[in-house]
Amino acid sequence: MVPVMGVAFGPMADGVTRRFPHGEVITRQGEDERCLSLVTEGAVRISSVTTGGREVVVGLLGPGDLFGESALLGHPSPVQARAIGRTEVVALHVSCIRAIVERQPATAEQLLRLVAGRLHRTRTALEEALACDVSGRVAGRLRDLVADHGVPEAGGVRLGVPVTQDELARMVGVSRETVNRTVGALAARGLVRSSPRSIVITDPEALAAEPRPSA
Image 1 (spheres, rainbow, N blue to C red):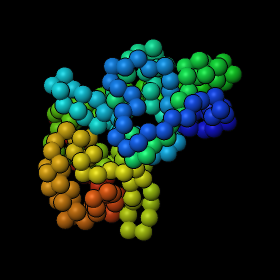
Image 2: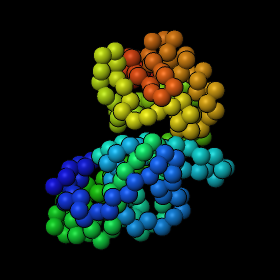
Image 3: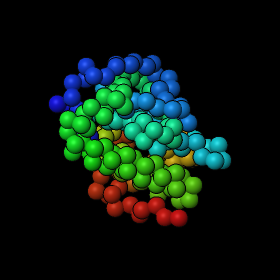
């Protein structure tokens, strides 16, 4: 079995491997889904377009992460999934998931937790993007990224997925210039260190103590 996000899946031969170049859309918002997808290489940007037409990134997924959980509910995808860098995913058809659940009933509960957790985080990200101050939103997204993709190293915690300031700007729903100023302020305080292709959290404890976003 292959444990992924707490869910034990059978052989990956049950799935279909798909490869995408940087920037290619894997799943479009509103598209009917029939598969749960496992990221095996690269990264996937999950975003949602608000009623006002603004795209908000609600998550960045790396190897071992799953997306496409709306297929389990028979609903259209509420988000768009796009490849960041060269990306590989394994698509597991709903019928394959049903067979796994029949063999391992406990897997159903784990999948429900996955769906509930993703929906909660998507809703929270959209609410913050619409209602909270920029500094709090940036700090909040960095905290989430550290929790999900942090890789400890000398001098701090590196984000294990490619996060440019453009990507961070999409996550918080503001311009790149605004995020650049905000990250610069955090860097001046010794909390982060950034480069064109990566961000290192140099003081995770201090970042965790930053005020939480509030409406």
